[in-house]
Image 1 (cartoon, rainbow, N blue to C red):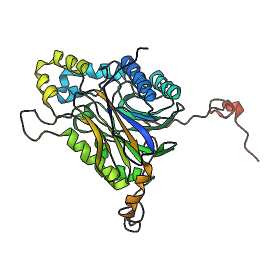
Image 2: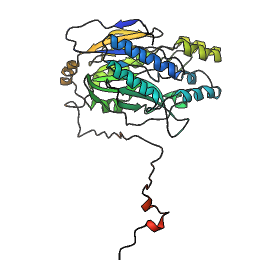
Image 3: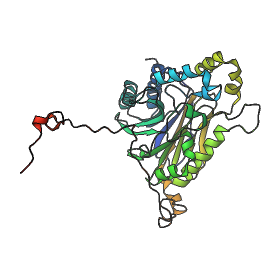
Image 4: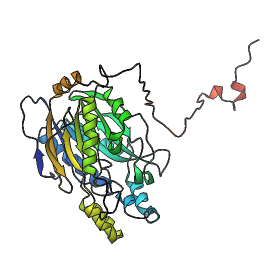
Length: 358
């Protein structure tokens, strides 16, 4: 496999650093081409590993891409794109995720990646999902975005709370949310209450809410920074933000279908990839917009402790006698099957039914 060479942005060394490095990929997918996305992801995992990475994070819905068409044109005109996305989406227990697990095991790194997930119960049900894979190639957490945002509802079904978990690993206690979930204070609290130290968040390339010519459009980079800073300040943890460029393959496809969409694709506010410290401050370099590259940072997890003296929102700065939060972390399924697999107990085998006791 050829080595994918991308420009790198490295965080300057700072005294007292201990953990890391952590890598956030600001890279575009090969749009609606799952095989090519997986190949690119494997190459990036190898690239990061050779540079000493321990954790590699990819953007939202990166395999095989974010459904930007829902913000560009009448949904009546986009049925074929939804069909294509459904066909290119992956099962969490499918070969594509298995290949990523093998890459993590081979390179000895953890990886968190956003993907469009297919359902075993419906050929048209998709979730906006992410998985955290260990350096041994095991899935440590599988999260489905609980509520699709705005035009995302045209594509994705609501997820559940099964992925609201913080995993204790050799590089820290890792949790994460997808895009707009980072603005949900209850979801953030659920992770903070599990002693989260590293908060991963996955983000799209653009999220237009108005034509570029109008004021008041959604500022994706600013909104991202605000929400992740809040999550990190509240939990006193480090934040990894992984956004994505639109990318040439996505732009070419969407503009070829509707030339008028070029204005939205080219001029909507872009997302960013960055790092946040436990006080809610951005540190290190930031990769923005259509610049493709890999950002590196190192986290000293000891720095998660001191700020707890000031505001430990899941400890001494909380009132459990006043507030109470219950979180349902069961995986939601469309049907629960109950079958009697023992032939001797089958209602169709009357001869096998035990006689009544006298």
